[in-house]
Length: 180
Image 1 (spheres, rainbow, N blue to C red):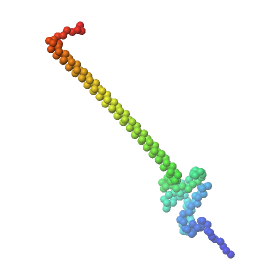
Image 2: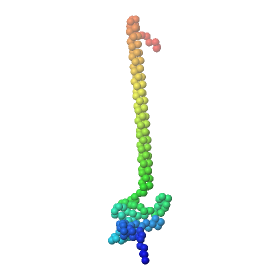
Image 3: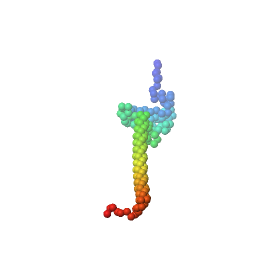
Image 4: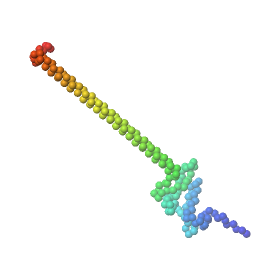
């Protein structure tokens, strides 16, 4: 008679033939997670920690179940945690985090651009105000110069008139006052 023993089951194959040091059973529907380590050529069931996670020494990570929605399915998922207890993000979560970081950086850069533009506009307003003040000062200087020139012209005209009166034999200090 022929006794069939092959192919062996997955458990036997991993434990006895390949001697894989860790064997994990996970049921995504019910959230069952069993963790086995190979000891003395037999898999030994290990108990999870107080958080329901298993420490994988070779990876320096915890393995546990996480309940939530992913890829259009709500249920249990295998997840990795750091030794500190921080959940390691999935690739899509990393992409979303990076997208949010890039968006924040974009907003920060936009705010910086707006701030720089406001500073530029303020500097331009200050420059224009300084130019207006310079122009006003120049106008005031020109007005004072004109007044000085007019006063000088009046003084010269008065001196010419006095010189003319004296040349005609008239003392300008003894002129009759017509205002009376």
